[in-house]
Amino acid sequence: MFTEESRSTAVAGSAESGDYKYKVNYNLSGNNLTSLHCNVYKKVSEEVTTSTGTQTVEREVYVGIMFQESGNKQFSFPQDTDITPHVAVFEEILSEVKAKLISDNTTAE
Image (cartoon, rainbow, N blue to C red; front, side, top):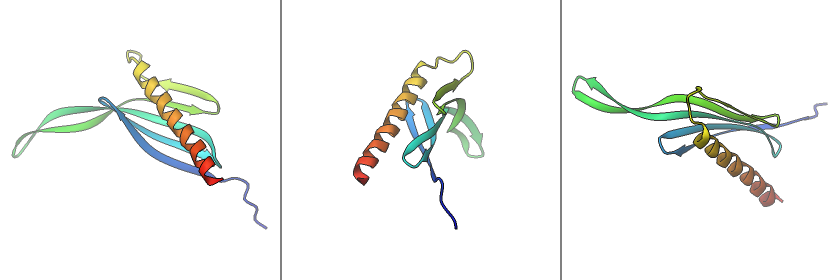
């Protein structure tokens, strides 16, 4: 009959640093991290005119993507973007996810 050969888990979350929001999605196969994608958005404020006057509205503008998959890390940003702070946040997110996986494995035993 049926034999389960694999099971995966998808996790979504976010992190913020300064004016940036990092929307994170990662996948697990068992307790192994198979991929982690991180979309980067800049929080911007703009004035909009409404029927009651002018209001400040905050929105998120897409900046780029960073991901790790199949043992490779890739970063995609417009060429004039300083990616250094974003890479540092990505590495921190990656470290936190891996530490949580180790912690969850230790707790489960």
